[in-house]
Amino acid sequence: MQSIGERATVLDGGNAIVYWNYLMGRHVLTGDNQKDALEFLYNHNTTHLLIDSSDIGKYGAYSSIGFKYWQ
Image (tube, rainbow, N blue to C red; front, side, top):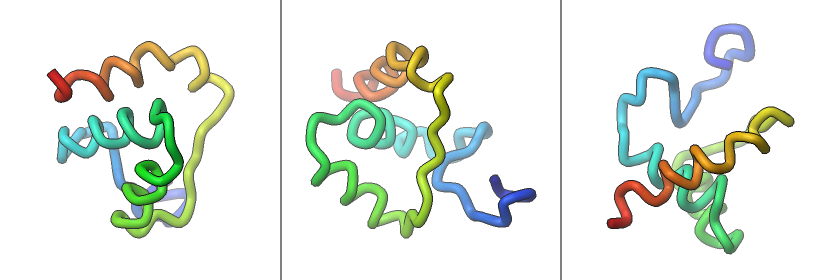
């Protein structure tokens, strides 16, 4: 996304800000309300959200990431 799409990303494979992984998992990918998800995306100036069909099978991983810091 960063090089080919010429778009900045909120999260990347390097996990520069691990807490943002939690927030993305908790509020955007597995959240139960749009308000929290949109607040996170808005606060990070997000203009696009890329999800593909393979992400459906990763729900367990996203849920785990979203729960990790909750405890």
